[in-house]
Structures are given as structure tokens and as C-alpha cells.
Amino acid sequence: MAGRTVRKRNRSRIVGAAAVAACAALVLSACGSTKDDVASGGKGGGDGKGKVGVILPLLTSPFWQSYNDYVPKMATSEGVDALKTVNSNSDPSQQITDINNQLNQGVKGLVVAPLDSAAISAGLDQAERKGVPVVAVDVAPEKGKVAMVVRANNVAYGEKACDYLGQQVKTGKVVQIMGDLASVNGRERSQAFRDCAKKKYPGLKVLEIPAKWESDTAASKLDTLLNANPDIKGIYMQAGGVYLAPTLQTLKSKGMLKKTGEKGHIAIVSNDGIPQEFAAIRKGQIDATVSQPADAYAKYGMYYIKAAMQGKTFKPGPTDHDSEIVKLPSGILEDQLPAPLVTKDNVDDPKLWGNTVN
Image (cartoon, rainbow, N blue to C red; front, side, top):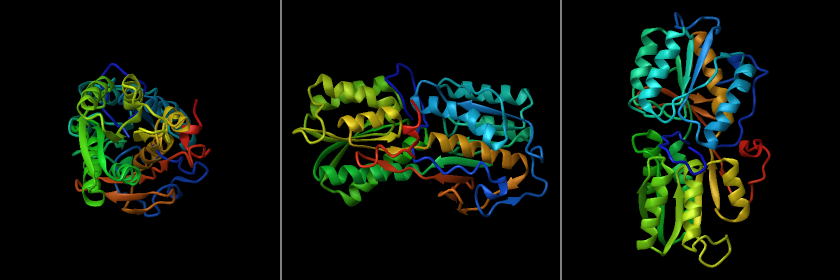
């Protein structure tokens, strides 16, 4: 999830990563899991042709703005006839309506970034009834049929943030500004951070702010928490897109925004990999972020929907693009794309997608 300070509800995605090596020049059977098969009698067009609907969760976040910009480029490179993207505007009910509208337009495939892990099942059921394959991006549905989930490992997000803060802070209070716990992304990041701190860094005392991917909520609750705990030593923001600006502004208003190396600096690690986070790292305002791959989300969303429309299926195992397909407890397959930790040491890496957009 990513964004400037926003005044409306943002449910993730949230979640950034080093750009995945392009394989547009390869045929589909070579650009994905090396264990993919052609399903006998699979649904879809059979030849991978037909219109594809692409449904966004929101456009108030720099992360999703970047993803939206990548969609037509990646659709072209993967040979997918994608319609103009539809923005569900942070409303899970609207997202179901958007799915139905696309199905009524006769799309042969759907690429959807779910706002709510549970609520999305209504839309998935409608698509299945019409024989239209769906690829989920960023958020894994709790139930329902999808050909693939294209996502980074959100448990790793929480663990990487915990390890970074644990090594920087050693002992004292740290706070994690959580996402929406109705989203599997928010739940996994929160629990992973919590479990890692308890197991590996017992000197840390973890405080928590449930902020629902809402910038106003994050700012208000952080202000209250800092009043009661002015000795906070570290902050983990689960979505830099929506939490970066309000967090920095809140710290600045209290005279607590100190640069790295200065006395009183609060160590901050984020999630997303947007250019604004990279700029904050360079300025010494925050220390690190976990980069979530907006470009690869768009690329492999297009790759997998075309494969599904051709009737292909995939199996768990390593892929040829530095990721691994895993089977979730629900039985759904998920391609877990890499998401590196970005610090001052590698923030200028030209391979990071956040360095390729304005």
C-alpha cells in the first residue's frame, strides 16, 4: 500500500520489490513456473485471446498509481488485450459491482487486486459461473477460485522490518502502524512482526496502532501514542504510501523528527518501495523500506491471466523469475515475488522500480 497523506479509506494491498527480470521475449511456457502444464478442458478462450478486465483497489496511493501505469505496458509486452483499468475507489462493495460490470461486457479474463480478502469471494463466484478465469494481485482471497495470486511474501515483510529494527534499536519501545486486519496483508505483516520480535528480540516492547490503511487514523493514533510514550525508539509502517507523510508530519510537529545519526533519531522502516520512501531514506528521515514490486505485479498479472485463458495450470515450485509458487492453505496457488530490503546502502540501485518512475 502506498501514498501521500490521503483523506479517505485505503485498503491494501497494499503491499515493493526489486524489479523482476523481464521475460517478455520468451514464449509463455518458458516465462513462469518451469512446472506449468496445459490443463485438459481448461476454461478460458483456449488461445489466450479476448478482452481482459483489470480492476484496481484505489488510485490515491503512489504504489497503485505506478501499478496502473505499468498495466498497459505489461499487457502489450505479454500480448494481452487489456481494457482500460477500473478503479474501485477503496470500496469492497463497489469492487464486486465492477467485477460484474466487466463480466457483463464479455471479458474473457480478469485481473483483480482485492480490497477485502473475504468479500472478494462474491465476485470470484460470479466469474467462475461464467467460466472467466481470474488472477488476484497483491491480496490473496480467503476463498473462491483464482488461477494464481501474484503477490510478494507478506510474512517476510513483517520479519524483515522486525529484524532491521531489532538490530538498530536493541531494547526499548517500537510501534507498528498496522494495515487493515480485514486484509490478509495486514494480518500477515502484523503477526510476523509481532512473532519475530517476541522470538528474536525480547528487549523490544511492541506497541501497535490499527490504522486500516487510513492516513488520518495513523496520524491521530500516532500522536496520541507519542504523547503517552515519548520514548519510542522505532516505528514500522506497514504501508509507506499511506503512512509515510502523516508519520513524518506527526514526528516533525512534536520536534521528534531527527535524521539518522542525530541524537534522538527514531529508527523507521516501511513497506512499499515508492520514490517518496527512497527520497526519505536519502534525507535520513527513515532508515529502510521493503520494496513491493509494482512492475512485476502488473507483468505477472498479465502473464498468468493469458496462461489461464489458454487453459494452462501451474504447480508449486521455483520459477524462472526468482520467485516461488506456493500452495496456500486454501489450496490457491501464489507466486511469491521477491521483495528486497532497501537501505541507504542500496537505495540508488537502478533495478529498483521506485528508481524508474518520477
